[in-house]
Image (cartoon, rainbow, N blue to C red):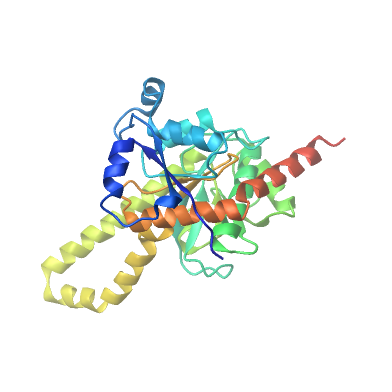
Length: 318
């Protein structure tokens, strides 16, 4: 299925126009939205948003909020993106806390042929309630169905053990709601080792825990890269072993390459927001745009909204 895209490029008009002169493009599919200020990666997001009212991320969010755009893609500051969305975009009714989802590679999963799974939240909402965790499960399931084309995504709740009675009251209540919800294919509690081994298509947790898990995985990846370089320098036998593994290593690099999966969704709002990697080039941005277009076309936000409304109605029925 193809989608006819109209792209709104938000930023300093003269800079965008100068760049467009140097590349082949379809001018009729592009509109420039002028924004005179930029929030840098190293700026404090809250302070920058309060002082730079014409920042490109704010202008872009307002464009989506007004209905002039259906989705947003940004490779800028994550903090500025999350705060700007909270400030400018309407949330889905009933949702108090948004979730930033991370895409990560896993061992092959029986439930899906997609090499990537989803963990949320990884930092948009630090501490959450049981209802928020349930809504994160709705968000992740809807996104996996649309983007990964998994008909019935498996959902796991990250906990300190697989038993139903593990965790605090919020985790136990969230477990009970997910277990009894026919909209979800809930597989129960999962532990940290289940994240890379493919314990579920969607893993749900509060932002503090998810952020730690994500940074831990990134750190382990860097350690393995460093060890590989040391081994290559140290002995002929190690170099031969690495050469024999080179095909598998190239495949692993392709699977874990952020350029291929496009970006991470910020969920909970009435329009899709995709956070692309800060080092994104043309391939990564193109894939992030494709992901955003799929989310719009398949009605991801509407599906989340229906699930939240159904739960809220059932909860308030006498």
